[in-house]
Length: 444
Ligand SMILES: CC(C)=CCC/C(C)=C/CC/C(C)=C/COP(=O)(O)OP(=O)(O)O
Ligand SMILES: [Zn+2]
Image 1 (cartoon, rainbow, N blue to C red):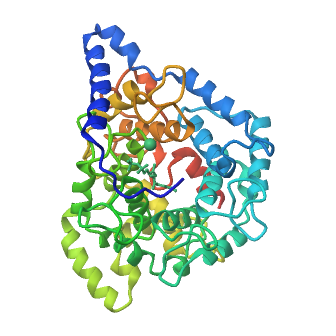
Image 2 (image 1 turned 180 degrees about the vertical axis):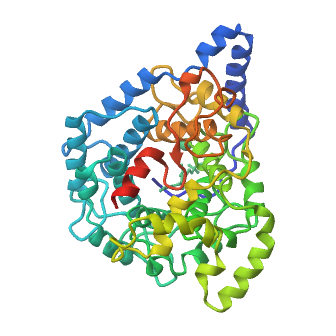
Image 3 (image 1 turned 180 degrees about the horizontal axis):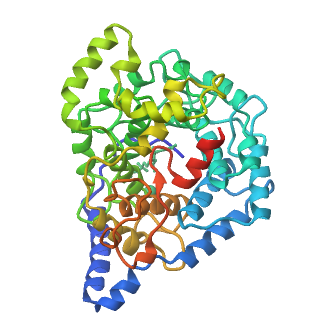
């Protein structure tokens, strides 16, 4: 996946063309009787599954389409299948594990395809794929010792991470490194040190987070930056009111999200932007942000990062921390960092959704969903696995956005269309189906 290009404001004509297509769909929908509307809002589960399974079966050492992205394809497809509450048969599962293993570099991390250079983004995709598959064979194929060595090799003196040897330094690299380390329970002070300072330097005057210092705020990087800060327990250092304000204004008249100001709506931002709301809902009260920020400054001067950046109180986390298997895994990670993701998801949502979750579901089901299976960016575009993964992830975020507990079944009114549209809930810090996350949490 490439970094966002410099801002190219869309022309009025491009905006008009999208709005014309979207409003034609919505007008047609409004003209239908209720039962026909329900049919139009139906999630085409079988068609999606057919499209996804076909894509997965085509993957293999000799398959050269999107060659450097094959680990990503595994994740996009497997995660989509898991969101639909389905799984792959054991023969296909073993083939995928073997294939991902071929992408594992002898010195740690995963490449996008066999024999290629290990890369942080494909490492994240490979690890998330294996966790989504679940089970002893998938989990134990990950070399965690070597992984830690790879992550440390990508770490820069500034604290940030590089995508690969001699590669770009950006917020995606920070997120993928910290996410992988956190879920594999190898996250420690050495990996975390100064990452927060780098991410803070990427929060722009608009409130969102850019890919690198001085660049433009973008939904993809805002998700990455926010999730990374939470995983390090440093979210309180961000200017959260202005971040929330920026994300909230990215949902437009088409009902979907745009990635940045003056750009077009796109289904994949349902997760990148919608996911930020899922994160915000589980942060402790934003009201005390001001007092926390001054505490942060005080503690930073004294070098006390952990206390300075606390957004999850010690007490809230302590029971989970003590009940985990930290003792057995103490040579990996440090107890302070390894269970933040677990504590986070156990918290009740403190806020109602700060975006229009029904409107977003409407955009996803009527404008992004392709009747023959798969999802797309917007009407007029082709379906692909990337958009299928992030549209389904965004749909799940919407459906559970009114639920206090991450895994409790939503009320019917939170789910647009028939209740059979309901997807599996995700862990929003990692974008992994919740049950799969718990299985990995127990294993590592
Ligand atoms: C985990 C991981 C690696 C996350 C990456 C997150 C991320 C940066 C996503 C956005 C990537 C993307 C499609 C940018 C589009 O820029 P554009 O200029 O083509 O599109 P725009 O007009 O919508 O801004
Ligand atoms: Zn997109």
